[in-house]
Length: 81
Image (cartoon, rainbow, N blue to C red; front, side, top):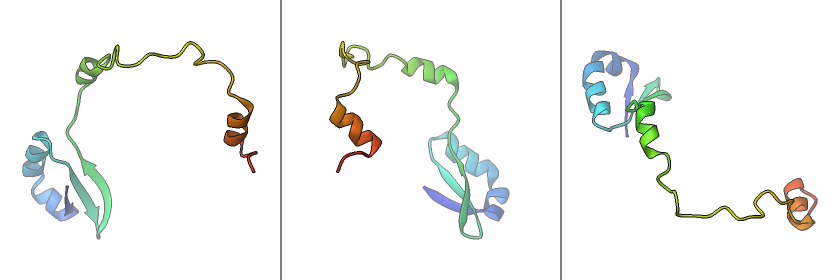
């Protein structure tokens, strides 16, 4: 991932956008501090095609919503010594 300063980004915006369009990610920095990242835009249409890809790869157990055992619940609440 390349980092460019604001001046470089303004001067070469079209070139940077072309690179991003091809999958690159570019960080824009101000005085060496990263302030933004140019990333490829993905529409919700692409997201929809990814929904359900893991169907059938795992099964939710019957006791999924059952209360946790006391020792595990205590660990989450910080009561374990």
